[in-house]
Length: 489
Image 1 (cartoon, rainbow, N blue to C red):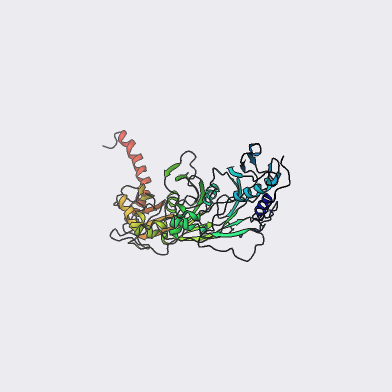
Image 2 (cartoon, rainbow, N blue to C red):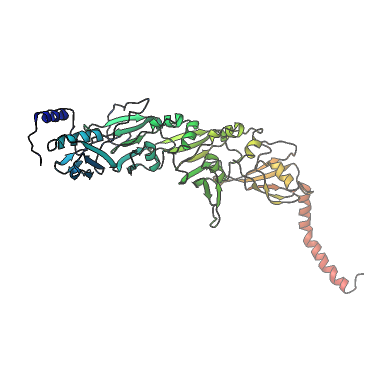
């Protein structure tokens, strides 16, 4: 062991080295204020918004880091060391040294000053061999909020987008313009800053994908996105994975309203009462696919004002208006937005129909391929028929072969089962030259029944036949035995 008394030259060097080192005391635990959006009281001072993310800071040591300490020409004091739970490095000769929260350069200077008490001009080299796992938390508009442990490989710290992917991706109402990050400070006071992650999608600038630090807390607020922004966000690498199933509901003017499950681009559904069959097709989880699963839209559906009711993590809801007519008319694919878990699609009833638009709507994938209509009574070929979804009353009668000779031509009865369970029965005029009309020649719906009644002459003939039928049978019963006895020729 070397003497503790140093020559004046070495003492001067030692004092200068100590003067160049500033070691701030690091508390064992730091109490972090709650993030915005939590139930606890938060400061009314908003976090500062940055046009660019803060500059990257040097990595700081903490419990679990493994370092190698090399002292030139003193191999007995060199070797690998792990930072203990209390943030100290237990080193030979100098004992435990608190390095929690210090960078590699700061730790190197501190160890040099510690060994300088026992060694003459120690040359200390410190290298980081493996990083400790990071403990971070995330809340807000993320699919799986909570605490996460991120493994660090090599010398690269985990990035913000890696945490978003690990937490299931952001929701479709996430305001990624203002991702808020709360980071423990070395003085015990947390740092709060805002990152505009949208710049990463818009410009591809990776500096907005900041590296994370141990103890970071991330909050993603709720925002309102345009349809274009929603489409871009749905395709981002940190959006929700399409391999996960989502439960949605479709209500309103569709043939089979109710809950449905869409999974990973594969849609699965079962008809009511069907216990053995299912349909699976490879399509994205969008509004139009959900409408297809629900049997397609009804003829009176208002596709200009379809609404998506979407819950938020804050407990509220957002209503997103979608104009599917723009999708059919101009190919505006932004109207066919991606869905997320617990969305409800509402298709309202149209107050009036434009006959010129009907062929476009019924010929699209939004409508069913066919409807079932039962045509009975005085037609040539009555019975259940599969017809196109834009079939009107007069066309259904023609599809059944038209009126027969007994029909009361010029009118028919329409019986319809309403969604509320009630039944309506109406008598409508039939003019094969007339176009589609809500009053006189309406578009048919699935399971409609058309009845063509007999004419007055046919009913009279049926009545006479009913009255004279028994008399004729009596006469026939009397005459037949007489003929058998050869009484009558």
